Length: 429
Image (cartoon, rainbow, N blue to C red):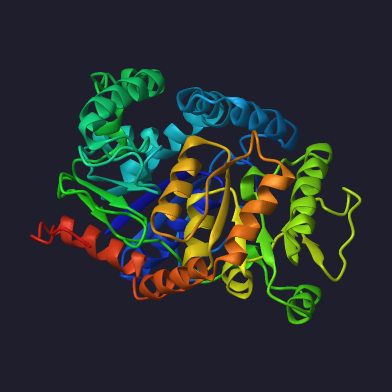
């Protein structure tokens, strides 16, 4: 069978699709993966060990200079819908037509399409071509339920909150969706959440069941497959000799990263480094601080703090005491799989949801927001984690359960079972 996948975003949006594509290829299918990376061209040289055909579409979307302006505009926008509008306008809209053209070509040559939940070009192309479409959610915050809502209000309000949320999301997203639908003579979407984000054919929730609490009213076409993880890939690199020596020279450090939300320009990155460095010093902990341009920022490593341009999460997180991060889906689940408690500094509402979910299951402290965080506040959050070993114990227990999962294998099973119409849709734990 020919299976086409399409994704858009940063590393945390791309890595799960690389993992799923590899799994489907190893299951005996002919797989093509389209990648649009917002902030980098590093995937241009990525190859697949299993033989997946990888095509890069319109990458990168933005320049480093644009990234700094866009990032701060999003961080300062308190309204989640305003944040989403900015992402659409600045990071999605400029390459929407290129992604749509690539999606239509992919639909023509594939028997099945699988897309990032945000990827309405792929969903529209599949619908127009009459091909089945699987949506992959990288967060469970977007699934309507009378039993839960990201705001965390009492259950009695959830039906109204979801009615309002869906209307507002549709108002924000539908101009993009319906513009493409009109090009193909298709009727406009009346509910983007139900028509695009949640596929009536099959929606996979790529979140570990240890974090994602399945709700009783989710339809059987929404299935939790687990974290779409894979072994360390070439572009993620290895631990340097200097970092390995630093890790061996003292107590386990706190790893600190803003991931794709680290400001790309030197001036803003210097400010971010000042915040993280001062917080580590005030907390009295050793730290590894990730920043791509740390040398240009004028900082120097010592026996207490080491600066690195990047480091593979799979290799570094297990050797740390805790992880300070931005609350991205990939980083959050990598830290959880490593058995480490988190301190989340959220930039957008989805990251706030991850922070609240980690706190709910007992492996993180209070949410911290990027727009208002101070070094003193962050230091207090770090000390809370380090001074409460029960958080680390719980994180290790969650990781042990998560290690028994295989999100890629489960996703492949669910996809193939759906294709064969087997009655496999039962409630997962």
